[in-house]
Image (tube, rainbow, N blue to C red; front, top):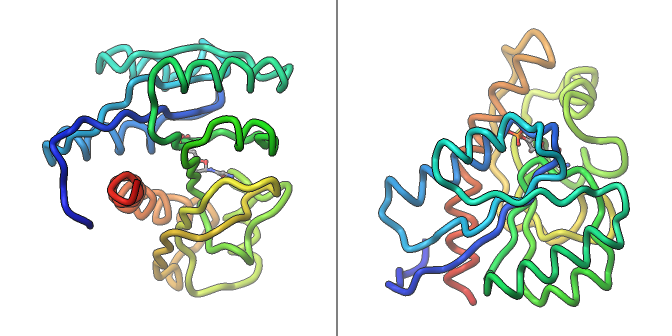
Length: 200
Ligand code: GAR
């Protein structure tokens, strides 16, 4: 981790309505427990029914619902929000759609994502949720892990910032792999966001 600065850095998280919010809450807890000057100024959800949205409200994390059925409208609202909030970084936390080139360049800030497997092998269209762990299990891999990468125009692709492997040789199901990988995700995402913020 790079050196700290006392200026509060402002981040936005982006989640689908199906997100459990586990990465989002792990990020929130890390910054709070480490007393680091990073604030989630807005947790964006595509659906108000998300359980994670309720968890945010309990923790006083400001939320915003932006439906993603019309991606052009979604992106316009996201860009306006990021600018009005003076956000320095966007962290995807269970957001399963692609952001366009125009959106990424208009945002002008880093957009990071976490993927529940080792990229580049287990990335690409369709590789999300349990499907990733099922593919890893079917391949008989002894290692899986989590990858943090810059968001790219291709699904779960882009410059890899951090990757951590975990031994899954004794896992007897994709569900068991998922649990082990999720623990790694919770460990590495917030420090990687913090390091990225220090580089700005
Ligand atoms: C996490 O496992 C994350 O790595 C994955 O979705 C889950 C969301 O967790 N993201 C992707 O697969 C991105 N392609 P959450 O439900 O706790 O937010």
